[in-house]
Length: 133
Image (cartoon, rainbow, N blue to C red; front, side, top):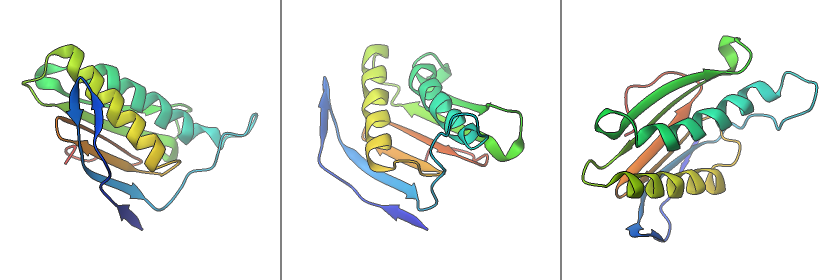
């Protein structure tokens, strides 16, 4: 089950306006010390951080990667991010950080999530996918 909504603008240098948000209704278990359940959560946290910082350094501000915290296919997290090419690097980073904050505040523990702002976007899933949109 997917949930979608649009909310109020976020401001940081530019006006970061949320244009689309999709949260998978399926959620992953919270981290439990000493248990394997943390593996997908670990992958999500790492892939989203990589998206935030990797996008501004990627060719054409188009970044994708995959993370697996324990080498088990079921705990693999795929991620993709992009910024508008008109943005300077610092503003791309600001936009990606705003998307990150929106993603985790709106889609807490979703198995997959997509946030699209007016100048950038990010997505993560438990399966590979072709693009942010």
